[in-house]
Image (cartoon, rainbow, N blue to C red; front, side, top):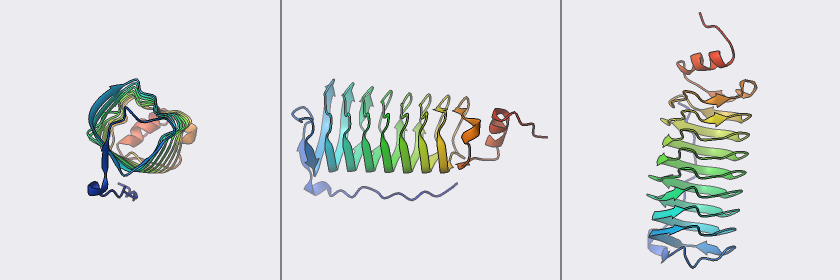
Length: 212
């Protein structure tokens, strides 16, 4: 398995101020904040800039984070259902034990991001850029990464059943330990993809090759 090094968020929990998302206004900047233990639906949270902050035990349904930025941010035990992160930026960010079911990340940017022990089935990240990003034990069944670019990305022990990677491009992208049954790849864009011996048979069928 290829080693991918990422820069982790640096957060001092003792310096964080606890806030609720409800009074937050679009286009505001927030630093050194902890959002903890609440549930909200249908919030408009566009153009936010979150830095050196933490979300913990937060449940959000159908909220809109259009063009928001998350830097040095941790999401722990959070649930985001059908939320929109269109054209969002994630830099030095972690999602641990989270649900991201049906969330949309089109045209988004991921740099030094960790997804761990999470459920991101039906996630959509079309036309997105992922660099120095790790997915560790993540359910990505039916996820859609069409027309995205992957640079130094690791899928470690993930399930990618029926995930779509049409017209995506790869550089140092490792899927060796993940399940890829019924995944959709573009045969002309497989360079830079690191696969296991067992996965060669899957890609041989994709390329209409016969292995004897």
